Amino acid sequence: MEYFQKKYLKNNVLRKILILVFFLLLSIALTYPLWHVHRMTAFSDWSFHASRVQEIFLNLKRHNIFTFIASSTFNSTGVASFLFYPTIFLYPWAFLRFVFSPISSYYVWYTCFNFLTLIIAYLCMKDTSKSDRRAIIFALLYTLSARRIYLGVTGYVLGEFIASTFLPLAFFGIYKIFYTKNHDWIMLSIGMSLIVYSHILSVFITVQFLTIFVLIQLFRKKITFKIFKNLLKAIFLTFGLSLGIIFPFLTDYIGHNIEGPRSGVLILESASDFVQQSLANSSSGMSIGIVLLIILLTGWILFNKFNFVDKIMYISAIFACIFSTSIFPWMLISNSVFGVIQLPWRYLSYACLFLAIIGSKIMTAEYWLTSYFTKCLALLVMIVCFISYFGAVQNQVKENSVVQKSYLKKNTVGLKQIPISVQLNNSNYNYQFGYSVKNGETDYYPNKAFKYAKSIQKHIVIIDGNRRKKITPSPMSNGIMYAVRLKHDSKIDIPVLKYSNTIVFDNGKAVSSRTSYRDTPIINGKRGVNSIVVKYIPSRFFYVLIAIPILLWILIFTKVVLSIKVMHRN
Image (cartoon, rainbow, N blue to C red):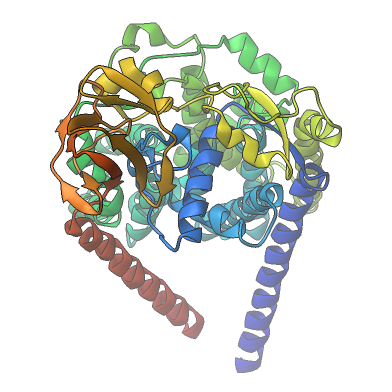
């Protein structure tokens, strides 16, 4: 018996290693056609995220690990988008800049996240279904979906792209609470916390679906005291793990008249656009790809054979697709709290997740196919997913392959917004930071600063309220220096955004400052040269709150390792 146990364990370990190798080689193969020419066509949100990574990279070069405000990017305005838009998963990309060229560093980062998504999706489904075949099919259907391609290498909606990696953890986590004997709640906390670290709007949408699932269980009277207690545990642990993200909102955002991204429905597409783009298998905002569309349109045939959870997943996928289009009356609630969604097609990431779950069930269900045919179908699905992916990225590959008219030139005319689509290579990569970003340049500005954004971005120093002088700033880690020469004592309005933890130094000494009509600091300058440094310095309590999640992650990691050891013993 001991011999057979050892042989089983050995074969099991070997199978897992082979699966990991397959996922790794697949992730590299997916990226290579885009990567090998060392060019990229940057579109939409790229410049926003690339600027954030550039700021983190420059701060790391200055031996400063934390980034709070923009001093070298975003026109050196000191905007605090780093405080309110999570950056944790941008750090690997910034670290890769020390090893690879700018273009390669992004594609290595993209490859790593595809690999991680494949692994997480596989492990979640394997833990639930106990089937390697179904877990692999689910991982492929989800990771290679047209929606994720759009997020990662077409629209560069990188906050959502990162969050999509961890969505399976949250939804399989709620499954474990409701439908397993132990009602294990740790996975839900881990998944939700990692989504918090990725993209706040994804947290909002995820909570919507999780709330619906909880209400369904309440309606069915399936929530016991133990389940309720574990849900509360998951909520409190998520809060504890997210303290470093939540704290800046409490200290600098809420009640401080900070303007976040514009609320309201910005773009609304029709259902016909959704079907047409999905049929075309395009990597666009309104596409889930042809494979998942077929699953959506044909899933009803086997609906009666689904178990309760599968039925909920399929219905949720249908509603997620409806929410993404003009079928849902978005304009009636555009000015409500749901207006923060901005782009209803964000729901398609969730549709892809739910449809991948259903698709993996259909393609491995032996109640309608024999074991032999399900194995053949599994192989066919792998091939189709692979072909579908390259079909979706073929336009991007074509645009990268030759120098385009949109090849980015150096900005020589002052303040100018970067074009919506530009071609970058390793030679002109840094030129993009001489432009204003396309989307998000003024996100998280203090309220009054919007009206005077141009004068702040042009570095106009205002002396005694009427004399305007353009001065080139000197960036430093989380701070910006202006050298202002005065003939006599004067009031100096510095073109750097002021937040609650902004501190001003004049000639090396901290000085008091008032807030100007531009939401920038005003100080009393002395005759002569004033070396004025405006810095963001968080309270010491911030660092204490950073330590709490780190300690909690260590405890979770220890618990997981001990659980794995117990499983192997048994």
